[in-house]
Image (cartoon, rainbow, N blue to C red):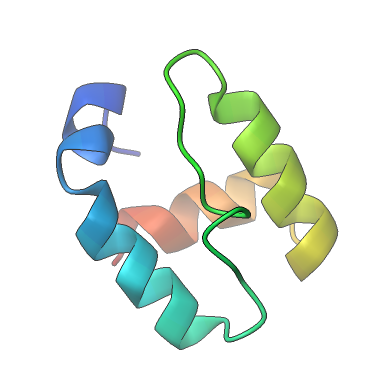
Length: 62
């Protein structure tokens, strides 16, 4: 997976792609705050029913 700096740097683009791929996601689900990456992944795991590893793979391939 990309490091946090790379991920944060193009996060708006990533959010758009995730919302296209998973229409049920909202901006609140994809809120990426410094130091709260685990909370975001937790929200996504619950909403999408995927593991953290699966989510990292999805985000890394966008």
